Length: 317
Ligand SMILES: *[C@@H]1O[C@H](CO)[C@@H](O)[C@H](O)[C@H]1NC(C)=O
Ligand SMILES: *[C@@H]1O[C@H](CO)[C@@H](O)[C@H](O)[C@H]1NC(C)=O
Image (cartoon, rainbow, N blue to C red; front, side, top):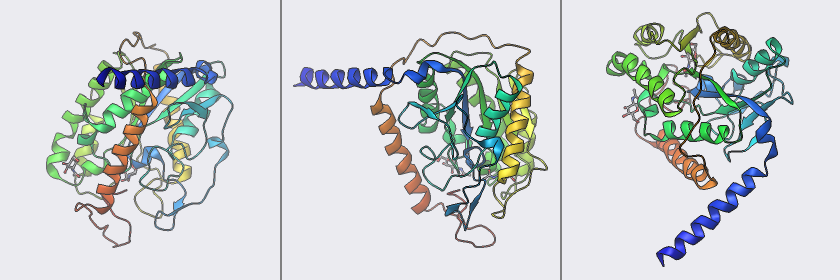
């Protein structure tokens, strides 16, 4: 009985891998970027009507380009288009984030860099504890990145925009620096990329009272690979919670500028040895767990109303 199950499993895995290999585009992707964090990284630019519609406005800086791909939830490279996180951040309507503007800007600065592969992993409303090693979000990010690397190419940077959810409780704000450092170190270690550039965004304002503590933690992170771009001054939209489409365009360009600077000190990369074969079962297990998490967020007890008592809930954003 058990060997029989194994056989089915192995056959299944084989089949999935063969299907993945048929995805020839994979080998075209040369520059891989992880996008992680919460809603501003996922993208809420142009999301209106209490977060139930996206206005569909795509500025020229965020347009698709034959040299920009995204890793789908099913772990294949597809043409990248806004909203980049639509099959990943399933809890809310996604809009424009910094990813496309970033990728277009990188290509504009360096047309010979080769095709770009974006690996969207951000989930709205998540706090840094939920990104700890071993958790669903962390594992998802690592597995997706490993899957992205399978077809060749090189991981170029982790782009990280998070922190708002940790401005609510003093305890979380106090521990933020420790948790952030640990997260970045773990990612570099687990991706076998000790010099991988991490480009994070410093939070400018927040709904939670402990914004300054979190911001200070971000600015004081002091790790050799970590660079910070500051969201201060970027316009926040009518929901008071997320930066606007045009702000996302600008942020993407700031991230690209910062990435460009890292290019002068090239990252040394080691080959990935483990988990070469990520199969569709992992992707679907992920989808199930994230749906459960989102249901909890939407219907659980943790929902906190925003001060203006709109139907928007704080915990779910
Ligand atoms: C952060 O997430 C963890 C795990 O879900 C939870 O226990 C904790 O209460 C959260 N903190 C905040 C401020 O939401
Ligand atoms: C989005 O970023 C802006 C600018 O830093 C910040 O004011 C806001 O709190 C962030 N929102 C979330 C949900 O992270």
